[in-house]
Length: 408
Image 1: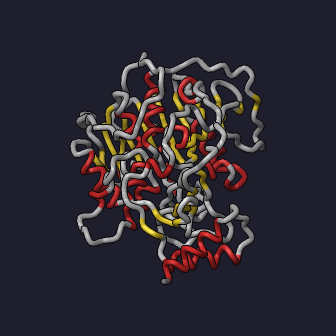
Image 2: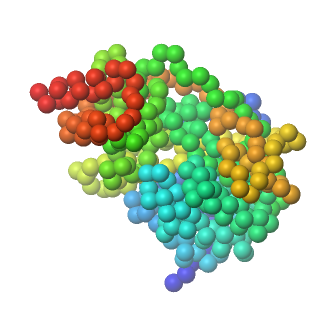
Image 3: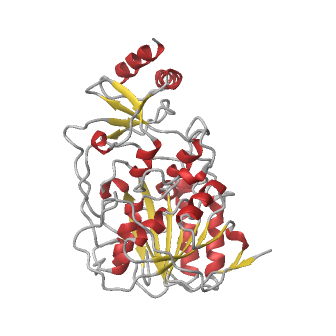
């Protein structure tokens, strides 16, 4: 039976993760918003929005383990499993949809915007036929900018314009917010009545140079042939899958000691801006592995990114787009673009809207690391030798030495 969500669902205040810090010099001039979250995952967007007074009215998530996390942390909010069963949305100011990325991700099947999972964004447009939120926020992987020669983005923008929305998007890096994770995500904000450029585009710190003396390097031991996910003093993008078909932790190379280790699941939750053990309610079986938790963390939205959006929604700033370049229908999608009124334009901004100081990767970790197993190390070395990747000086030597140590 289809579900109609009551308009008077209770609003919920949440306690913010201590790792999340607001951007400086932000004074609210607009009222907080009521939020509906579709494809809510484990609540990263909602948790970040809460720091700035926004309140959650409805959540929708079909993955059972993620839904258990939401039910635990958002106990008074209406939670429905399947977006396809929602007949109409409750009245709200902001509709959020971090729609599934499996068909858009390089780590997934890359079936495109019409794939079985990512095609669910069509349900968002179905609901918007009758709903009138002030704002719409979409979130997904940056690979959708180039997948199928940009057709995914052309589909999204055509649908938004058909429904009467102004829109703006920007690729944002989680590292800009003080997290030791190199994670790029597309944020697309749209409104029928407002200028979304005033939210996503005014802030720009510019990408800084890499640290001069990194404490460690992050990489994916599940790769090795055609990719590595190399990150300096950070981990590569945490993800819900891998090239060998399982969600897993990244590995860290510590040159000062020669160690090859993997971080604890609790530290990777913190790398997304959650409190440690945020995903523990996903299972009640304490003897089970953390595989499901790795998947949940990898698919989540970084909390500080959502916190920045929440701050900007309460304090819009003027944006001068007069020098932005027109974007043609066959042009590649840039790092940021907008359409307000007539025409589509490329915005000259970086993926670093702010630059929140961050500790080194090793200083960030609070929980014991674990040596990468001999089996995992051997598999990575085999793939690395079969491929044609170039590696940092001393890296493969350290991996080979680590394997010998683990075999002893």
